[in-house]
Image (cartoon, rainbow, N blue to C red; front, top):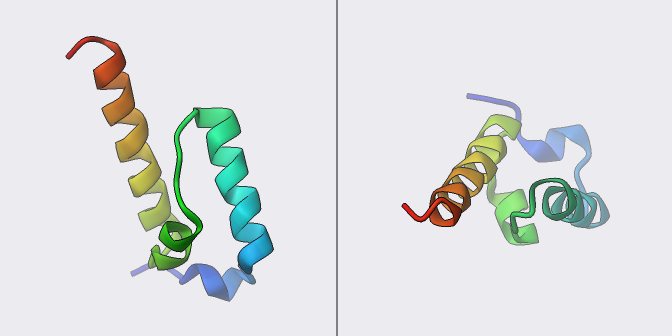
Length: 62
């Protein structure tokens, strides 16, 4: 099990910054509650990766 995001000092302002970065860099959306709900950075990355791959599949016509 990974370290909870709150242990890294994640607060609402930081979560909004993460949300904006994900949108800007990956053109994928994630909500602030989803960021806080992630049990670890690994879980958050897996959620984001799943969305990026799902969106890529839609864009490829598959």
